[in-house]
Length: 90
Image 1: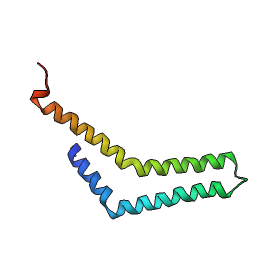
Image 2 (image 1 turned 180 degrees about the vertical axis):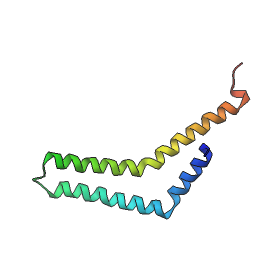
Image 3 (image 1 turned 90 degrees about the horizontal axis):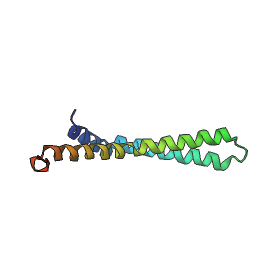
Image 4 (image 1 turned 45 degrees about the vertical axis):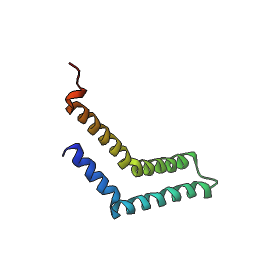
């Protein structure tokens, strides 16, 4: 699969109803983890760190398509520059 095809698939994913479901669920999980920390004054430090990790992981998942999109766009821009004979130095 070429970077251009990957980018198109990724953009299609971001526009899909399924991705909306994933982001909604992960957003709800982030709120639930944060509320569990806020509502439990006697929570152990290990439990707090576990929930913080869960929040971080959910955020990484939600942001993943954007990070991949930027990477692919950069690859395409670099390959377009490499393909342009005027951009090459002799």
